[in-house]
Image (tube, rainbow, N blue to C red; front, side, top):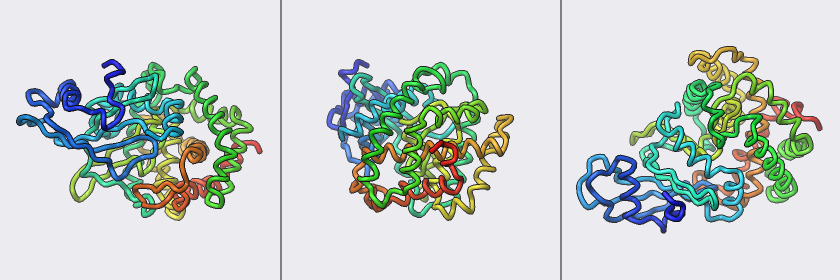
Length: 376
């Protein structure tokens, strides 16, 4: 499909394009899309526009979906530019193209994944997971986080040191050219964020995150090089932002566990995903009680799925490194987010929800003395 024909917004969708796309996906054979109605999802993410598309056909078609989810680039300039510069939109499209059939962890079925690499305009058509439940981040359930960790271990084990990870440039394999480019981009983004985020969020931003950002910027290469041992123990496919807001769970209406928002997918350390789900999927008090058990569950599940030599000690070190990455992700993202923006899931502004967005990460960093990993 040529880039000029990629619908870059809900308004650009047409019955003819939807018909052709669903036929190419193999779910539409005889009927045509006669009409469609687009409705924004209540739980909009910060990086994209997501809409539910109700479909009406001109005749019966047993396998045709009655509704689908369409995802487009954010119309908000700073976020769109940041995501395009970091390749987030391209990575998500490429993930569904290359891994959508069997990623090793449940995902929504993808009917279409197209992008204009020049502008960042993209469209994803995905299975409607409306029967599923999205967790409430302010009232987390330990059982939800445990389920996510079990799936995560199986996913990481499937791609542990897999040769395919080196064959796909969008995955930024550690030590290769794309990874070096990403390091440079991360340094620039952190430098831009450091003077902005403390002023924007004020007392809602824990000082330990400011200190983490300051040390990481001053010693970026050294900080990233400390990950060398962790990566030598195993490189796998990582989601990159594996927290409750990116997960579907079964509900009373049905549904199933599934992972979405693959804009940060890469080849790297499984500890990054593990740190993200434990720190953001639990309150600080829950993490203190259940962290050790969840780390043990992940490490033993990796072994059960065939990963060798990944000891509890190595798992802990990868987790500590993941806490650094998670904290920096939050800090950089905060530079592009309006603190008065209302989160669609919680109903709180980003500032009001600082316990989730900043506090949990800061508490874990302090509990594990993670700043000791980076020179002052």
